[in-house]
Amino acid sequence: MTVTSLRPAVPVTPGSSVTRALLRAVAGPTPPFVALVLGLWGIWTPSAWTDEIVTIDVARRSWPQLGELLGRVDAVHGLHYVLMWLVGQLNGGLNEFTARVPSAVAVAVAAAGLSWLGRLLGGPRLGLYAGLLLAVLPTASRYAQEARSFAFVMAVAVPATGVLVKVLSSGARARWLAGYAVLIALLGWFNLLGLLLVAAHAVTVVLRRPGRRVLVRLLAALAAGLAAVVPLLVLAAAQSSAVGDAAPVTAGTPFTYFTWLLTPGQATLPTALKLLLTGTALAALTLLAARRHQAPPLALAVGVPWLAVPPLLLMAVSFGHPLFAYRYLLFCLPALALLLATAATTIPPRLQLLFALLPAVPLYASHQAIRQEDSRQWDTHAVIRTLRIHDAPGDAVLFSGARCGLIATAFKEAFTSRSDLGRARTAATLGALDHQPAGPALLQQRLAHVPRVWHITCTHLSTTARRTATRTTAIQEQALTDAGFTPTCHYRAPGVDITLESVPKGRHPQVLARTVPAGWKRGGRHRPGSVRAMSSPESDKAGAFGHAVSPLNH
Image 1 (tube, one colour):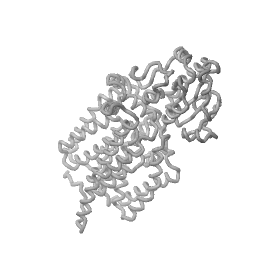
Image 2: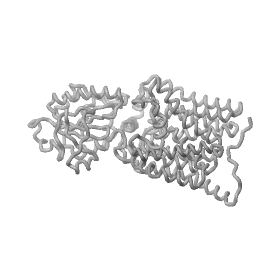
Image 3: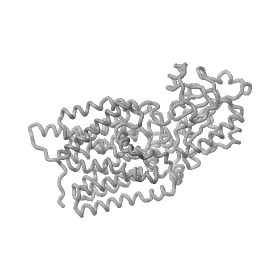
Image 4: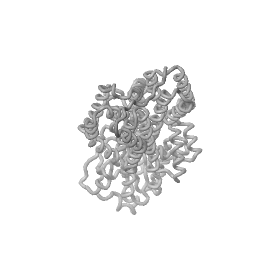
């Protein structure tokens, strides 16, 4: 089969060469610049949550400790952990900001790659539109501000798809085949589920029907790339990786997936704005389907399988082995941007302006929502702020809930003067992701030497972790009761409950004056998940925390 050029035929008209030259000049640098600016906008504001805290804690370990961890658990995230460890070494340490910046850079790389891919498929206009659309989508910014591997998977998936297009158009030149093998290997090492992209590529190849020579060479490159991932597959199969609860797959999952690509999280936007955003995108794709003969054929052959095949496969697998989580499919976001950009190139300029203006308000509102401090599953900033404002000399902390104790190790500067009573051995010394909790005897011994304890319970947990946390919490509460502590007041933030426990009067008379912080109320001991956030008349305290302090009930 003869190889045809991917460049669309464009009639030469007066001024067209100038326009195309201008588009070429801006199509390359503009999308990654916009993506990086949006990724860095407010990157320090959202509170670090469970997975990010794990990243920071792991990246702060010594190289031998990191190697021991990856040999025992979570090797599937090993490449990302190693990268974050290197960032920490170069930066003299790792914190929320420095841990997130690489993800922002990865999203910028993805936007640059999609602009290049769009130019390959349909010229500079399609490249500019596709790259900019990816840059401005809130879901891209959301994961540009998360210290996990998902942005990196997307950053690899885009050039891998671009290289596939070059292989199909260049007659399978050696350099593109080698690049494809390397990128497929990187895709798997960043996240094994990223290899679902290979299935989408297979559909694209079937639709394009390349010659036997191209197909054989492409399969050889793919086999080489997959072979490089085999050691990780073997190691991961022998480990119990830290996988949380998977979302149940229902009839509404495909629509929810589509909505998530446009705006992350179910509470990010009011229903009306979410429907406006989703409806606009669906209308654009409907117009693309109606005008498909005016669109570059390969753009559809690449974009549609990329958007649809990976989620369908993951949903199918999840019926037998629950794995479905939307964040695993972030690498499909560029496909949606590519298809929406393709739709824009097939409609008149007036309709392009309309489709640009309709989603403007929902997009802005979603960008604002994902940059709020409490927009993540854990509001760790609230924990640190509460202790900073209300603690007293000699106060200690007691953590309950999987990974919860890592807050103190990931934010060492905020906990240097506060003893962690519930930790027997650190996760780093264990080669694990969780600290070893102190037993009842050790906990009793430590409680005898402190006047007040901040009992911090993390409530956003998987089902398995919640069962373990319930047992640990019961042991801790019994130890507190046996030591004579009583709950004084309670504060609740997203994913975190904080209870101040104090000893009876007379045991530590020097701290009685500060037993109850001003504006707080007394109450019974908190049981995780049993307390509703209540409004507080002390508006200044609620304003200081961002959430209200409430009395407790059994």
